[in-house]
Length: 113
Image 1 (cartoon, rainbow, N blue to C red):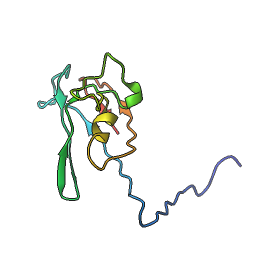
Image 2 (cartoon, one colour; image 1 turned 90 degrees about the vertical axis):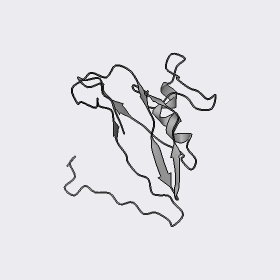
Image 3 (cartoon, rainbow, N blue to C red; image 1 turned 180 degrees about the vertical axis):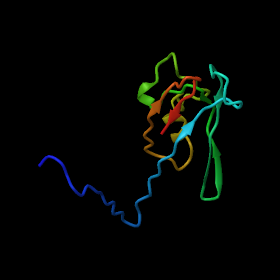
Image 4 (cartoon, rainbow, N blue to C red; image 1 turned 135 degrees about the vertical axis):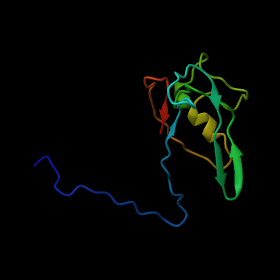
């Protein structure tokens, strides 16, 4: 048969392997009804008791550094591009981030995972 009756997976990690997490970030207008057509935001990460803040992220940031072009690299740093991936990976202690994006929704919001 081409179907599996008991599909599953198991992840076994060694003690030195960091645990990967899945996070979702969504943009919406404060009033919940306005259309988003511009702006920026930052993210904060608390890791090992230290708080790090990203550089500003465009409201419609492309997901991956490979998606960046000269038209969408809104960077205040030569090291950090305008993608969600670039902004997050610029934080201390963050490596190998993979980002996907959906949207815009009817009100101009995006969701990054």
